[in-house]
Length: 170
Image 1 (cartoon, rainbow, N blue to C red):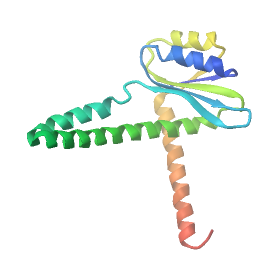
Image 2 (image 1 turned 30 degrees about the vertical axis):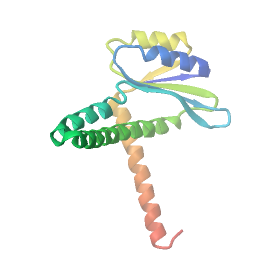
Image 3 (image 1 turned 135 degrees about the vertical axis):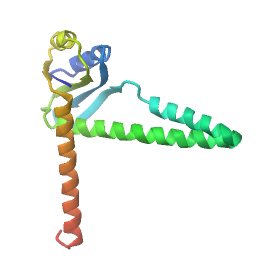
Image 4 (image 1 turned 90 degrees about the horizontal axis):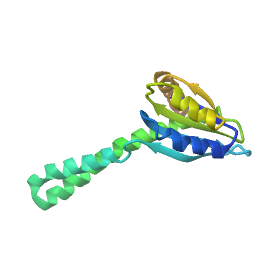
C-alpha cells in the first residue's frame, strides 16, 4: 500500500490520475482535509467495480432459464442482489479504511492511497516526486490489521454504549 501526502490538492489529483495507470493497481483514492478540518474524498477508483454485480446477474439469469421468462427475470434479480451485496461490503470496508487513515491527515493537506502490487518501486516513486508528494510504503497485511483493529474497537465501543444504555447509565 502506498500513502502519498501532498501540500497541494491539485498535485494529489494529478498523481492519482497517473497512479491509476500503473500496472498492478487495484484501487486508489484521494482524501483532502480542508483548513477547517473537514474531510473529503473527491477521487476514488476500484479496478473491476461492478463486475461482481453484473456477472452474478448474468449467472442468475442463465440459471433462471429453466423457469422460463419469469425465471430469467427472478434469477437475474437475485444474482444481481447477491453480487451487489458483496460489492457493497467491499466498498464499505474500503471506506472504513479511509476513515482510519484520515486521522493522520493534517488540515489543508491531501493524501493519495494506492493499493497495488509493485514489480518495481521506480514508477510510483517518480510520480510522487514529480508532484511533490511524500511517499510511504506499508505492507497490505499491516494496513488490513490496523483497519480491523479500528473496526473491532468501534464495535466494542458501540456494545459498551448499548450496555450502558440498557442499564440506565447514560
